[in-house]
Length: 422
Image 1 (spheres, rainbow, N blue to C red):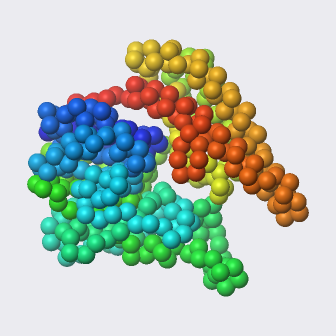
Image 2 (image 1 turned 135 degrees about the vertical axis):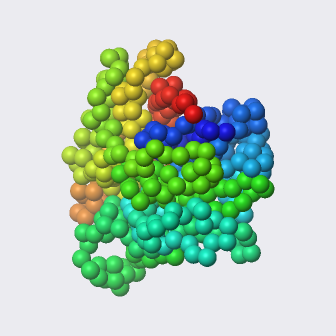
Image 3 (image 1 turned 30 degrees about the vertical axis):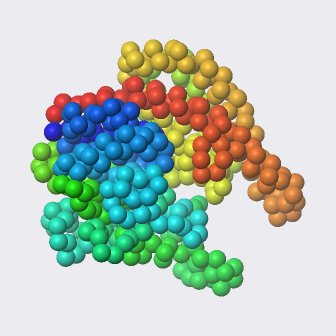
């Protein structure tokens, strides 16, 4: 029991962040799929810790199936440990598409803008913890800056053994609501907007909300975090992640270093020489350039492209980071064989996607330009139909996007080292 299992399904960008974090910390890991868990992997070869990255909790549950969900519950009940970030945290909750490890549920949003928050938040650590004090490092900052990337929220229940390790406090300097950076707004702006327009945008809805929780399930333990402790170049979050892993595994897995170095996927040197894959990288570079040239995209940080509200930026980040990662990884025989079998169709679909996305992005830009003087020139319904055809319906995935994402996700999975030495 000396390895960490990373549950890979439906993680995409967030799976890459977790993998990078464990690599940086020189921790032993094994990348696993839901079908392997459903077939009894956790029973025959239990890990020191099961780590589930962010992503869509519903799709993760579907990848596991009822048998996989049962296997995880049995593993934890027998003394296993579970750590989940964002979508992986949601998977650990009770309710539809949950593992029911934690009796709390996911809270509903009263305003969708409450979900569109990103960046670092200073957090308040839990006090008077009865059974979880070992999960907070000695001499740790009282208000660590912890990163969130469009988090959901917990719905606390009274009279449970769940303990709050941290709660949100005040926004950090890089905190955004949708495409609004808080640090650039003059003091009093939110008050004025509320008075003038009757809309609440201030992040006060997060203050005091739990963001990292823990509890016991059977003989095992879980930690669920809507903060992304694996975020690159986030020193306090990274240090806490290393400590939590050490504590959950009772010292059997210890980080050799704690800082996760910064990540620049778009500029990493290619290790593949396949012309089609390099052409695909060039096409996505051009999509990003078009978006930036027309003020629809912007550099959020070194590894994340920001986007204007309403643009499917999260989807494009999944595709772009997946492709950048694939091109910069050393080819493996399995990956080369897979790419040879799918590259022709992938490139055909990509060219269709490229033409569609160019038209869609430019139509969005035209609509923004004309919105004050000729608001009906580019209809909202037309834009919605274009987006749905390319990316699927809102809050779901489909269209050419899903086809391309499936290929890239499989390719990256075949390129990653699936296990490291213990």
